[in-house]
Length: 249
Image (cartoon, rainbow, N blue to C red; front, side):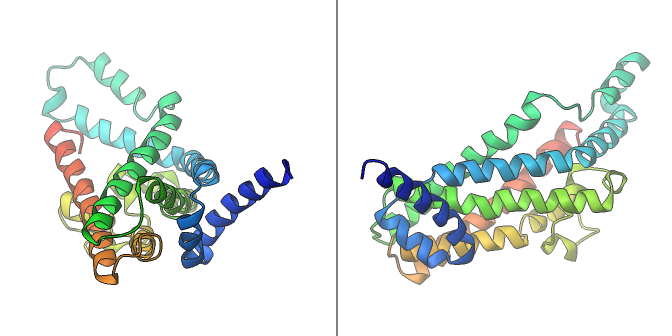
């Protein structure tokens, strides 16, 4: 008995990850009574690291192209030729942070998603708590962030690193509304590119989590799920605006 209980818990955790993709209502119903996020964390990190490795050539090429444009501009006007050459050579260089950044980003994204879902839970007089919504958000990260990173990596590999002249161009590779405004301003492209097949999937999963785990009304569930989607898109556009102001885009 002492051995079978932990084994069952582990199996349930992994099956919850699978059901979040295949049968989300069952997954979020299970999370109401048995919140778990260990397996989701492991799978999400594994997928994100695989995606990172697949994207490395494209990221390196995009970073090099961006730095090259910068050194040819006013930002490097007072830099020596040696300093410019050094900046280009170090662009997109792989280091430990290359692999730590996605993991840190995962925790930040899951925390923020949990926070907004908790606000939705309070607004809708739901029955969930931070722990259950954290577990649900971590499981949601598997298809949205994890599989999203792998798919982007596969697309980047198929298209080839030379296809990407900027980080924004790499972000545009995933099917999204950004494809409708290919010649728009960088901020506009970033905003619509953030509304991708994976973020829309996340919208549906967030709404399902609030409806099933928190037992809120569909109106509250979809309102806050849409809010998270739009805030993510605004964050992406804001990031591009800051990069432009700093001379990085």
